[in-house]
Image 1 (cartoon, one colour):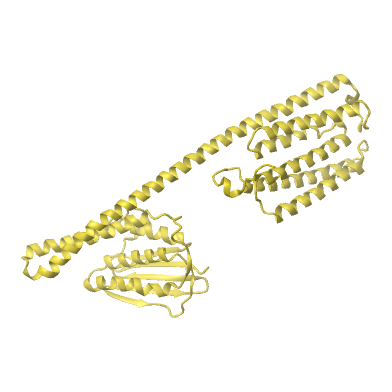
Image 2: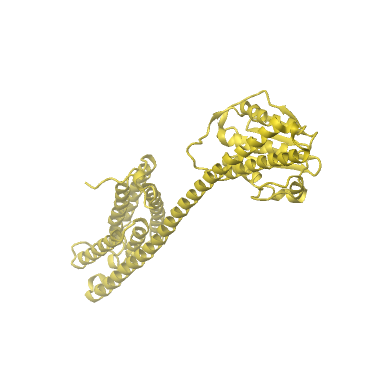
Length: 444
């Protein structure tokens, strides 16, 4: 008994139980189309009183085909795909059944004179498309040749009755010529179909392999990038801590010039830490299994993030106003990403709001969405530049003048993280009056 190949065993293959099941369903749909076409054919020959064909026999073929279609339809819809050999067996069973019925149809519509004799080619093309290897198509080609040749010879030897008014069935020269053309057509079609599909599959596999290699390279690059960013962050934090200690302990005794230089150093280290945070976030892998959606109540986490930035706001003489909705509802959300979004938005609001300004954090809820609205009375964003604000490495012109150091990554990171959670983010802003960012998440 052949070893079963399950879906999990062929994760990186295009030839999977699921792909074969889709092709089985496609084949079943083609058969329904054939049933309809054959029914139309029967109606037409009956309407035009072409009585050389046995109507009852053709009708029997249509009924058998209808029953077979129904059985396959129910089976394919009710039974999930499991392993390759099973799906391949379904394909072969369909083709075998079709060939039996097709041979009967060819017999009842004139044998070697039948207009349906070249329909054998269709299943060869189908086999070339469906199967991963060459030999099934060639085996099917040989079977079609044997069936058609056997039927032709049986009619010539009068073992079975010949239907129709043609004389080719009893003329050895006509038979030889017709069978020769049939053989050439069948085997040429098989060779062309298999060759083209093999080349297509080879290119497809090559593209898939290159894609895998690129993804692996990208992942390694991001891991290295994240590692370097993390390693840079530690010594910068150490420098910042040293500066803070000097300013806290000896600040009163330092000369003004020295104190100013240390203050600038502290500010620069804070900016560098924020930049490194952005760089680490942008290297975050969306498929990282460590971060999965869970049922959370976002309103419960908003105050925690706000409290982290409150001392920074107080130091800059910026007022933070909270307006958290009382109606709290949980929904599926990646807590890690949510906190990243909150952190970046509040950080930007505080960063680009001058002293004496206000940052307002508001949440809201309706039947379909949960909203996070962060407004500030900061420098605002020029109208003509707002369409670029979510692009990577883009910074508004007035932002560069207000705050020289920045990567331009913050807003692009926010947009990516919001969309990753099926959310949307909107911006309303006016230069000199501030900005309002509205984020909404579906209540799933």
